[in-house]
Length: 258
Image 1: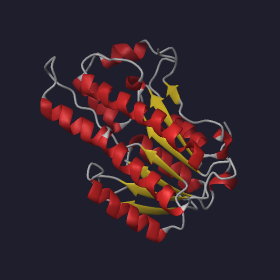
Image 2: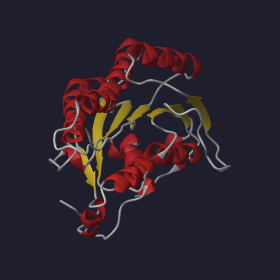
Image 3: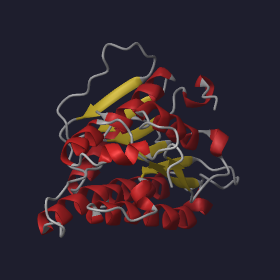
Image 4: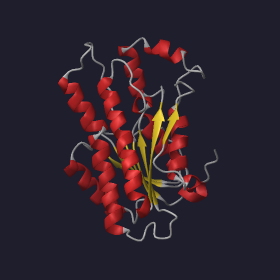
């Protein structure tokens, strides 16, 4: 696909988990396209490796997206800083691997609070912002905002040994499809990107805990994990005007593995 600077320049986006992995790749691409990016992350720092860009970066370290109060405070700061929010990328998420067949309750509570609660808190904060501040968006039928939720192959199928993670990513897809219907008339498009194996810090950690992942990778028709940049390209497509007739969709990016 062709990503052009003209559309993204000067636009404002919120990215959760934007300090590493797929979120960092999205952040870098948007900054290079002269966009303004507000990054929410539990990390204390974000490393761009000295890369040159023409965008503006605002970083909100140690942000707890599982807390409504924390998210509300950050959105207040974002609104005070930027005149508009053109899109949100709900990327932050975790996966925990259990040595037992039945995962412990603390795994369930932590995974669901971040993977689902975080999407809920940030997603509804953005949607309420649209309702409160831009009632005119969508009046011409062309749309005015885009939310991209990062799901997983686990959004569309059950996978062994990670039942809680699968449940959380199924929930992300459910929110995506419902919000897409609820807010289409308000000019907001909502879609889900569902990566397969992707070479991120989270994936590498899981690879250590589950050596059998290497066997699963061999089954990928393209023969390798994806890269964060390959996922980020699809995210930018969904944020941009080239996808103006796309909403309520889940787009698998998995090297052909089904």
